[in-house]
Length: 219
Image: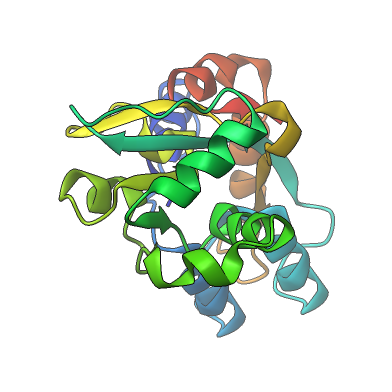
């Protein structure tokens, strides 16, 4: 879901460049991986790198077709108008986590990383009752905007520019975790050559401006 807006923009850019039109369905990463594993006939799949590695190992991807496309950092956000806790260093983020009434994270790579971070800080059990995991396909930003989450963490592309949400900034470098999103051609693709050309465009220098405009960085 972190890639849904940027993928749409990349698809439009590819079409303008004379490549094939593509219809993209954005779902949670767990669901996307399962659908490909179950044999759904799709041409391309975009996921975090570890999920694509599993799909490739299971024989669902065209060998050698994986392309690293974009990197996304984890950002911190609160509801628009709410106090903004300082998050400039690790100690401040830990203090903000301990002070928040509710904490929101996703089912995706950023959520997995954060729960591991809380474990490393030895506060996992302390904050567990306050953790709110966004359902698959639902951005943490939606929970923040509705007031269900006081302090939320997710990929920058999911938080920046969302109405009712104030994206404070990224996790500091000492505890930052960047997710690499990649694309690959599925073995059940009806036109694997056209699919590969689309991935080439998405990974090209011509697409870098689109990535940056949507809170991503080229991989």
